[in-house]
Image (cartoon, rainbow, N blue to C red; front, side, top):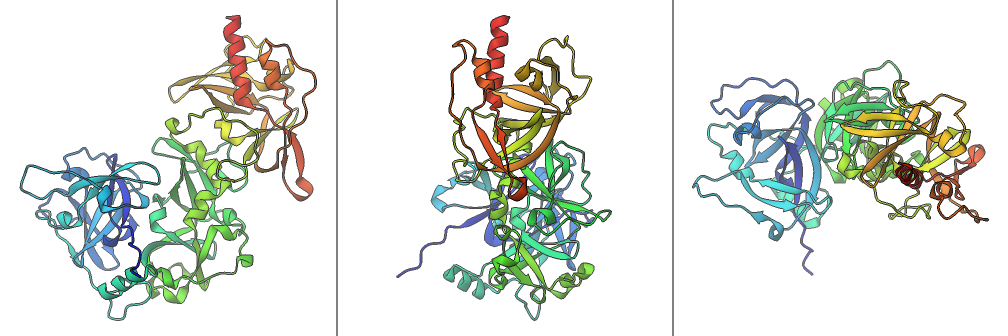
Amino acid sequence: MAPAAIRPGFGGFRIGGMELGLPMQVLREVVPCQELIRLPCAASCVTGGINLRGIMVPVIDLRILFGMPTPHVPFQSVMIMIHENRLLGLLTEGVTGVFTGETSEINHVHFAAADQSVFYGSIRRADNGTLVNLLSPAALAMLRDVPLAEHREMKKPTGIQADTANSQNKDQRQGQDKVIPVLLLRCNQIALTIDAMEVYTTLSDPEIKPSPLAMGSCRGVIEYAGSKIPVLDLLEVCGFGKIEPDTPLQAFLVQLPKGMAAFLVNKVIDVVRIRTGEIIDVPAYALPRSALFSGAIPKSSLPASCSQQDAILASQFLVLNGAGMKSCHEITALANVSAPEQMLVRHNRPQTATTDKTGRKRTMVTYLLGSETATPFEQIREILPFSHSIPIFEQTGPLLGMIVVRGRSIPVVCLHRLITGQPAQKAATNILVVEIDHEAIGFAIPALKSIETVEWEPELPQFGGEAANDDLKRAIRSNRLAQIGNGNSIRMLPVLDLEKIGRAFRAQQLAVA
């Protein structure tokens, strides 16, 4: 029986606001862009070179090639491609992951000029629907006056290095043991690695800012590309404790289905290539959160230059599972906060199940409101600190005033006064922002408590009823509970539907007006 056809893979990356892609077979690795070395080269698109383990690799800026502006973008990376055993670096703002596609799915473009263009078509990604412009490796390698570095194979290849063409063809036929670029990381003395194509970019010295999200493994947020991205302690996420205080920190960013998340490490050591056949199994019971790992790479399988860096004491590099991290509800719930505004417009959904469409357990944000109360995290668009400069109205009702966030005017309502009719006993510390029919409303609360997974969501029977025209009272009167926590920390909390409450409050205000 003939082997099943392998769908060709592409590596996606971004520069100058363009979504671009190259065939995976020509991509070698992605490295952080340090200061580029000047080269004696006439091509204006060659912005310099990088020292790639003793090889000077020229780097081109595609924005110059396409006649686009070239503003400085922090935290850039260089994607290394190989064509006919020659290397070229492409400046990027970050990689966007691997995707597959068929040749028949490519929408080809044609140019009237006889010269071959580096842009030959586009394809729509099946994973997120993005339209990606495809580049021709052969055309990039033939750019006028652009030098390419000759790739030197080591005399004694190890399992981490590139295979020869014959072994690559054999691997493709078998559909296994392929070569992938990985990022080597250190957290305390624990060595970790992750597929480099899962990493959006790396940050050499992240500036962590305080945030109401800073609880559990979240240390705060960083500002990147106009978004506030939650920063998580990678060790704590993996269940290995915490990164030691007062130690140098770096971070890497991962693009999730909605938003992004940053993970703190002590050191991004290097980017190297490994064969997937070098990954060994690790007993699941030996790992606190086994779903976040896909095995380990023995240190002896890595090049000596990489193994010796930073005096790694561990005998193996634990391999992080990118898919497992992207499906971890703790991570995705926090990443949703950093999602672009257009991705955070939420629609009404029946809140009757403990799990979402994918079968994963829902997450609740809990806060103090007299007693501890819960709201589905999916309803919370953003969590803001409360400022005493916010109130501008007479505080005889629940409406405190308005704030402006990224060009939007958001009314702020005292949730305690709205529910009880009485002033809050404690000053507000945070604002929960909820999206209602493309409008935002903020609920001021005394204090956040936690973000936790729901184990059970029972619904109590309704007795009696409010007047037919009192939608607000009906929205406030919650008959749903959420069981949160485990062991001695199990508690049953009332659940408030803030979207429903906000919609009813808005209708009441409009009726009065």
